[in-house]
Amino acid sequence: SPPNTKHMVYSMTMYSKSGKPYYFHGYKVVKDIPNPLRIWHDTSTLYVNIYAGTTADSEVIYKGVMHIEMFDFMKQMTTMKVLNAKNNVERLNALARFGVHFAGVLWESYGGVLVKPQLYDPNAPPRVKRPLAVCKPEFHYFSTDDQVTL
Image (cartoon, rainbow, N blue to C red; front, side, top):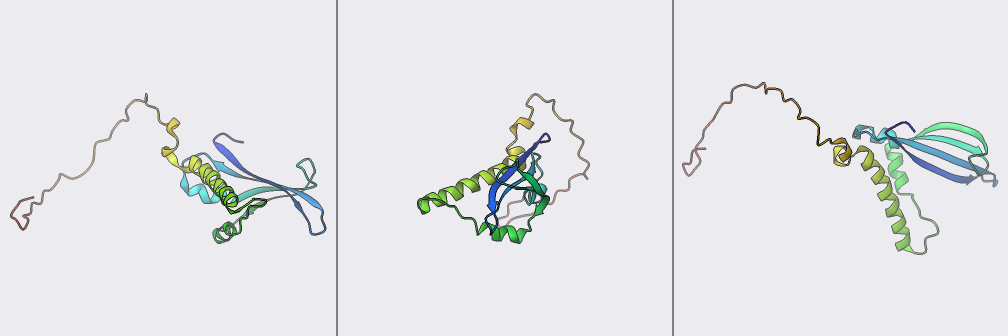
């Protein structure tokens, strides 16, 4: 990965209706720069390889880029299911862990100076302040109902 980037990785084995296995591997590039305007672009773009087999060592049969639109993403969030959970509490905990992980990656990458204390240099020299270029202040006094002048 280039410096200041993270990958959100997605991988799974898929099967066609006839039972033929395929391996799916995709990643999103999340730039570690405090620019919240990039969140949607970065998290809705998935770089994909599909392999004819069950591992990434199999032959690549497809390479491409997938994009998801906002409304499709919102719908997708309602379809998430946790498999093999013993009960509803375990199922909800697994969904919550995913949400915390996903949101945490985004917060670390796009949360700006609030999450990047390493960008603050306490030994840096003070910045040079420019003179403030404004008009001379005007004062407008008024009296309140109880005759106090403010």
